[in-house]
Amino acid sequence: MTTTPATAVPLSQDARTIGLIGLAHGTSHFFHLLLPPLFPWFIRDFQLSYSELGLLVTVFFVVSGVGQALSGFLVDRIGARPVLFAALGCFVTAALAAALASGYTGLVLASVLAGLGNAPFHPVDFTILNKRVSQGRLGHAFSVHGITGNLGWAVSPVLLVGITQATGSWRLAYLAAACVAGVVIALLVWNRDAIDDRQGRWAHQARQGAAGAGSTEHALAFLRLPSVWLCFSFFFWSTCALAAIQSFASPALQQLQGLPLSITSLVVTGFMLCGAVGMVLGGFLVAKVRRLEWTISAALLGGALLLVLAGAGAAPGVGAAALAALAGFGTGLAGPSRDMLIKRAAPPGATGRVYGMVYSGLDLGFAVAAPVFGALLDGGRPAGIFYGAAAALVMSVASAALVGARQRSRVPAAQAA
Figure 1 (cartoon, one colour):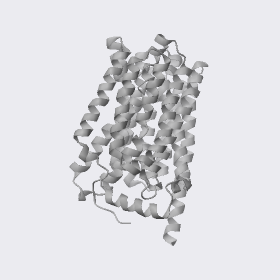
Figure 2 (figure 1 turned 120 degrees about the horizontal axis):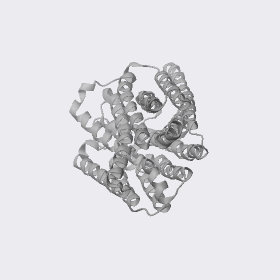
Figure 3 (figure 1 turned 180 degrees about the horizontal axis):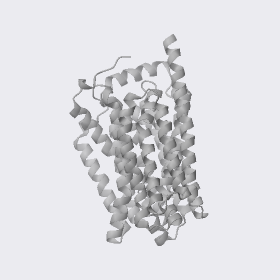
Figure 4 (figure 1 turned 180 degrees about the vertical axis):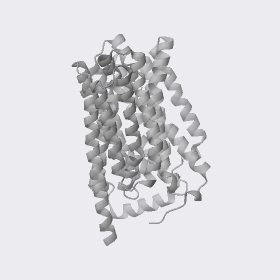
């Protein structure tokens, strides 16, 4: 295998592409949480249950999951950049729909539009990064990509809840969210040359790989690879855990510890910030650790233990919230290794399709987990939020171990050939 020195491409060029894609990814994660931070206000104004609110999350991720699997083919065919601009436009309309909602139907519409906007992001982002960023910096590109996603998750509840509390109107908060997406679109259009996946040092290599693959294999041939489905299952289980924390950790801690909403609403932000710190370190581990599944397993099992302790009340009051937030460090540490594991599983010329299919497991995890964990809260079992999230992380560790085992088994075969 030949490698290209990171110095072959100026750092400023790579950094510009990485930063712009990170901004876009952070925006998509911001809109993951367009609705959940304001669930208490929807309960007050529209008399909704947590199960009904959980269904809104399901709608978002069903639309996103189906769209993500399909958008990978679209990205491979027409390119990532135009799809990215269309996706961000969907976020603007989703925020406006939420601002104008007069009941549950309006919230469903906002959820559908946000899910449609979210669908292409992982095929788009990873296609641009893999084609535009030099190979020696890809690990750090994946790290930044994950960090900005976590920051988007962290900022969303702070901004939406903060504006709502400051103005007394959640509708104004959604108008502000529409403005956020509009500004991001303007910045990306202004710098569109840096995110053009049809140009750049690695784009010609990807086109040659696609041409070669297309001449011998069907476009769906990648679906025969067990590693693709194992990566899919890894995302499904890890996202079930994330869905529990994002949507229901705050009300669960209110019930378990009697903490005020002003404190528990910060748990998601803390979880994501801790995850961002973990991703910084994880970006360095990708280049140093050969067995990526070991990093993933240790990090996620540590996070699972902290969630169990939070649910069991091992630390009272704010201490329980701190334990739940610290669990984000483990999920963040595993992130860059996870993305590199998927890159190794992707055949040449199928980047968009593989990332689209694998990351649709993320959407399915959110879609399935949201109503399940919502029902746990409605049933008066708040500790189940943390125990269930921990169990899901353990299942994701098993999937990652199987992916690593299959990749190791291919190495002797390739050497023998």
